[in-house]
Figure 1 (cartoon, protein in one colour):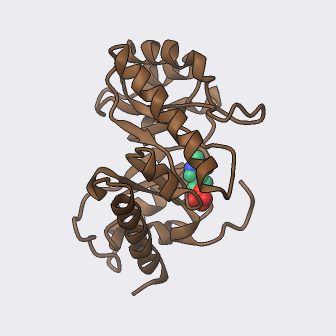
Figure 2: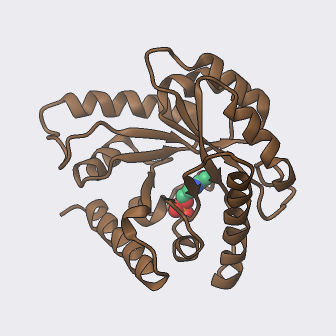
Length: 243
Ligand SMILES: *Cc1c(COP(=O)(O)O)cnc(C)c1O
């Protein structure tokens, strides 16, 4: 068994354990494997071990990798994965307006919408032959000046706008809280995102996704209702450059 498939198994176990500890159903928590900085070969190892959804942060790196994965998966040495389903690509990084077309053409999901202008461009540029682009709004939940994301007070307005765009499908909220080793502090940030999501629902906006939890705060995110954890280093190993 490859190291990546062992790591994947351990992450599934950690999700199951957290689900049990906090009274959640583990099947309500999807795993997004964050493959940024890792090569196409690693994506294929994870895919062969049954992983279907992958997250990327940098557009050019992602587009090159998507093409390479496609190429390799058609080659002899890579068989189908257990479900033989196609890979689903999620964009989770900051979005520059000159990169929206590549994102609209290559991804099934975008987790990092923080401005109406970017949302509008993605909707305009989503190719007709593809289904609507699934999107989450990234919220600056810890209020850090340096962090990406819409301010919590502006989230409802942005959600209404995104909902009005024909080629986007609003799925929910995403956050990367201030890093902390303390589970109680991690939970406070995730609880704030969950309550913001409930406010959207109360305002008549339907959402089904809370994209929260990374390698270092997975359990806290599950405790507060995460439906999708985004896990990189616990699956693929330590990254070579800081991101
Ligand atoms: C890199 C990254 C992750 C994964 O982080 P790990 O700590 O490696 O699990 C998740 N979400 C976002 C937005 C990221 O940039």
